[in-house]
Image 1 (tube, rainbow, N blue to C red):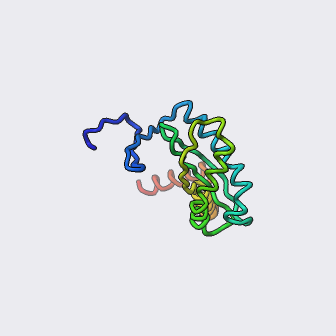
Image 2 (image 1 turned 90 degrees about the vertical axis):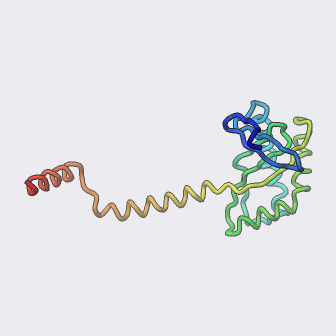
Image 3 (image 1 turned 60 degrees about the vertical axis):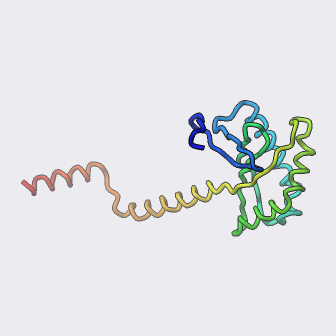
Length: 164
């Protein structure tokens, strides 16, 4: 594989014993199909989700990435109102045929071939919440020792005078 030249930003993926080159820079058609799948798969999850993972979990489609040949759709989902996000993804994998079939019914006139689907948890919002919490803690500890720029400069000058 080292002799294989790839453009910068491309990655390799092995799927069904064949090598796919996934270009990180998406074409216009890839973006169009991804947008269609994101919109329609969200509707599928709204209608079929209660049967698959119940009413309490809220699953939203945050992003969709397509391979160059439009054969695989990487669907990134955010899961809310449950502690066991991986369990929801597992239930979705178990119902993959049902979900892909419903998606196919909705997009069959817009694409030639219904892509294979792969699910990934998008936990960026969890990271954002954690960072907000950390910044909040920092602000709380620093709020007691916060001082103005004038005070800092005056303290610096006093320290320089004492050192001389």
